[in-house]
Amino acid sequence: MTQKRAALAALALIAFSAPFIEQWTTGRVEPFGRFDMVVTLVSLPFLFWWYHLDKREHGYRAGPLMNGGVLAVAIVALPVYFVRSRGWRRGAVAILLAALFFALLLALGEAGERAGALLER
Image (cartoon, rainbow, N blue to C red; front, side):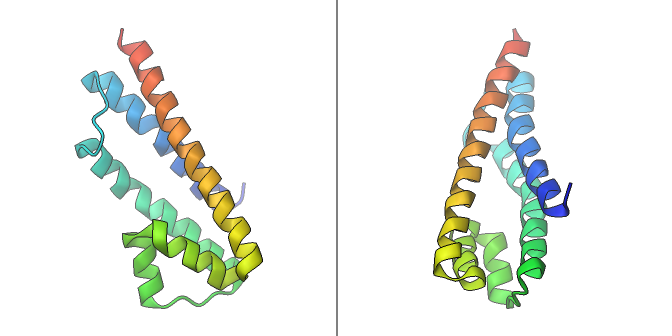
């Protein structure tokens, strides 16, 4: 498994296990609660790791603003990065793939919540 895939797999594992653990331990998943804050903080290093590997793969030299933007507002900075590092056409494809991966993370979160509810009973 490549390192980029390992970073994405870690994000997927976090997306499933965090709501699973929260549901199983507290009996509910609270949107925008403390658990979500912890999950965000745990996920950021894996997102930045993927971004760093992708930058190296594409030979893109990002400045501090782009690097900080990925950490602070990834939903804005990553599409900009995709277009700047790949051009418009390939950047648009990368944005679409990122949106699909995000949808997968949401689905894994829902699955984790439901699995936690099953074990809770």
